Image (cartoon, rainbow, N blue to C red; front, side):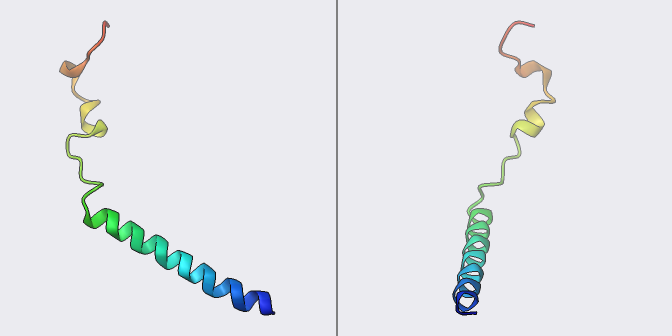
Amino acid sequence: MNLLLVLAPISVALGAFGLLAFRWTVKSGQYDDPLGDASRILDDHLRDGPE
């Protein structure tokens, strides 16, 4: 029972830290990439190598 009293707050704290880190990455714009791989793969004129 003593182990549960230690591990429960640690797991809640780690979950909160993960959530805060995710929110920070979203707010800093790390997922904003309108010209990323998802749209570049559809453009045929961007090929660099021989076909």
